[in-house]
Amino acid sequence: MSARLDGKVAIVTGGGNGLGRASAIRFAEEGAAGVVVADLLEAPARETVGLVEAAGGRAVFHPLDAASRDDNAAMVALALERFGQVDVLLTAAGVSHGAYRSGDADIARKRMMESVDNALTPWVPFLDLTVEELQAVLDVNLIGTMLAVQAVAAHLVEAERQGSLITIASIMAKSNSGPVPYNVSKAGVWMLTKIAARVLAPRGIRVNAIGPGYVSTNMTAAIKETPPEFLVPFMAQIPMGRFGEPVEIANTAVFLASDESSYFTGEILHPDGGFYTE
Ligand SMILES: NC(=O)c1ccc[n+]([C@@H]2O[C@H](COP(=O)([O-])OP(=O)(O)OC[C@H]3O[C@@H](n4cnc5c(N)ncnc54)[C@H](O)[C@@H]3O)[C@@H](O)[C@H]2O)c1
Image (cartoon, rainbow, N blue to C red; front, side):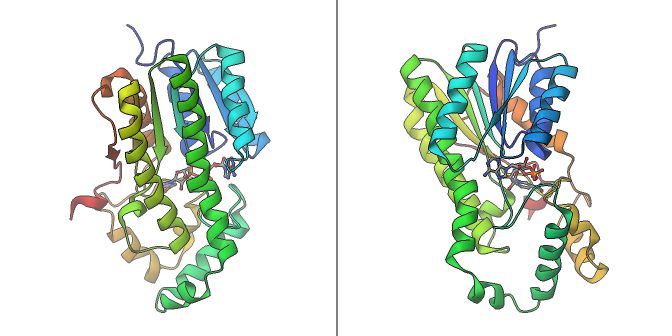
């Protein structure tokens, strides 16, 4: 039986953890010929490389600051050098706030408790928002996505090759409830995705977004530690009553990466447990 990504080469930004890691592994399981695991954090990204290899795939780590044009260009160059081509990009590098460091539970917990405290006075974090905080989130989530899409698309256009580029937005891309920097960055990713899809379609390059609901990763771990008066109404927003698992998002990425989605472009898919049924 042929696998769904037979022979394709993928670049996964934010591949060191969470949704990026799960997708890198699923890509390998579906026959990808190579995966570039790009991340700011070397240790977890090298672990992902090992997990991809254990799944029967080939992978290489690339040190990436998503907001650096040079790092993104070098990421594409590495894919070409090691695997000879690029067919798929998944941009999973992201932060939920300016101080976010994936896996730093103390920072995540402190930030979550501030959100709980502010739940009844939502104007306070809005009025206190600094340019530095806004910039830090936009740099990774929006500018980082733009630079990765641009770098891979530039190569594909020049090489006259087709490809599938997948961005990770969020349900928050369409929600007015949440922190300004994060929601604005994700709304920007969604608009960027639609524009890139339109301008790249004539060159055979598809661009789609995944807009996940709440998924069990480092980014959301602290939510589960909040007091019941916060957590119970929070969970009530999700008709399925549970967080998603990273593999459930990775399966969406496999579909968008594969030729099964050949007539999809400029679309956003929401694996979100029914968040958007209302
Ligand atoms: N977990 C969720 O519930 C959820 C829901 C919707 C959208 N998302 C989005 O999915 C993406 C992945 O998040 P996750 O939940 O897997 O979180 P995660 O923390 O598990 O993974 C994020 C990865 O991005 C990397 N990263 C952060 N800043 C970077 C930078 N400047 N350059 C390169 N890499 C960087 C981190 O090191 C980490 O490995 C993010 O864009 C996030 O906003 C997550």
